[in-house]
Amino acid sequence: MDTVLLGYDGMTLAELVAIARDGAPVDISAEATTELVKSSRLIAKWVAGEKKVYGVTTGFGNLADVSISKADTRRLQRNLLMSHASGVGQPLDTEAVRAVMALRVKDLLRGNSGARPQTVRLLVDLLNAVITPVVPEKGSVGASGDLCPLAHLALVLIGLGEADVNGERLPGAEALQRCGLSPVDLDSGEGLALINGTQVMTGIGGLAVYDAVALGKLIDIAASMSLEVLMGSRTEFDPRIHVLRPHPGQARVAANMLKITNNSDIVSSHKDCGRVQDAYTLRCSPQVHGASHDAVQYTRRVVETEMNSSTGNPLIFNDTETFLTGGNFHGQPVALAMDFMCMAVAELANISERRIERLVNPKLSGLPAFLVSDGGLNSGFMIAQYAAAALVSENKVLSHPACVDSIPTSANKEDHVSMGTISARKCREVVKNTENVIAIEFLCAAQALDLFTNLKPGEGSLAAYRAIREAIPHLDQDRVMNTDINTLVGLMRSGQITDAVERAVGELQ
Image 1 (cartoon, rainbow, N blue to C red):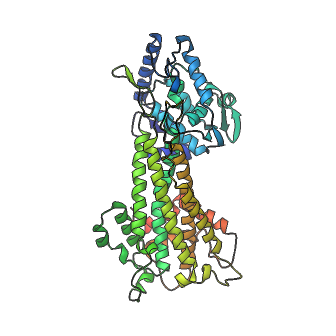
Image 2 (cartoon, helix red, strand yellow):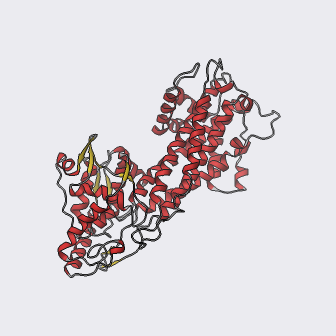
Image 3 (cartoon, rainbow, N blue to C red):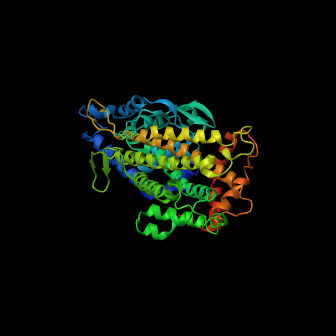
């Protein structure tokens, strides 16, 4: 596996996923190491000169006016990590923690935080040795950085806290020793440098964005299959319609669905029927899917900008040997974007579930009830639709924006916060729920296509159908439906369905 080289700029979402999920090794560019040396030397110079620097020779938050002696600046950083490690709840999953670690390294490597090369190197060594700090998921308000969860992560660097090593939960010092590593003795300012940033919300959010981008193509494929078996029309995908309302996502979806349903015998078989218009879930799929596509792409731009930003405080400028205090740790850009994407992805589940209902309801589809023979003896996809409805309803609750709330912290010094980490966490859950809803639509559409024995679907629909049927047989009588749903989700995540369709019709937008 290729090593991901991290430096000042240029980290991509694909690289984040490679590190977080695939275990890609990480290295540090020489140029970034040079900047780390410069900024850490500046910190040492300011401490020696007893210069007043927030979080280095002063307390934190509302205690910023309290001066710290030269003798206590190191102890201050250790105390910071211990006191700020106040998280609660279940630990974040391994891939989320690895994403956070990679982004924390990336931020530090910009040379604006004052961390030493050896401290950043130890964090890289943890990634490469697959030592995963135990980080409780709750406790960040998303301003002054993700202080609480990042403190739990940083504890392991000083031999405290806990970490997972090969599935075994160990004390931090033992985890390091197990992998031949030693804890670091933090220098002045390094504790603050390690925890003051937006990496938790950005790491969790980045993985959610990556998955949401993949869902964009998948839902276009699922909707195309549903349209065919529901005897829908391709007229609504005519580019002349979408030129008149030039939202980019709308046009992309229409082009995708036109391509997927190309050369469909099923669609051609009823082109002269008496139906005037399709239901909105079919006819307006470019408009609904497209709006969500555009929202996801907006969120992607925000997240990739944040991934390549300096989000600490104070910020050190090596070229002028100065520092400035500011608010780059405030998670508002990410919080707003994640809440926006949360609603956008929830809408994909909404429209998908309504197509599922049309597929299983004989009064709407003209197909056997719940898509199974011997209805009554067999329930078919009846409860699969229930499950989709439950997920959609849960998404609606999770779509309440977290960023509109703010509770002052640190004795009202930090009097507006973003709640961005809550936004990211709930958005990730909405993406997972929506993935399952789309999987159920795929299962129902494939089951319905089994009935069209004498008519071929469009080229893309047929490719998706064959990919599904290679892994999941036709449902001729009731079986444990959860197994089929999980198998279908696996096909989606692996890219097998999208790859099969794109081999047949070309790349989807």
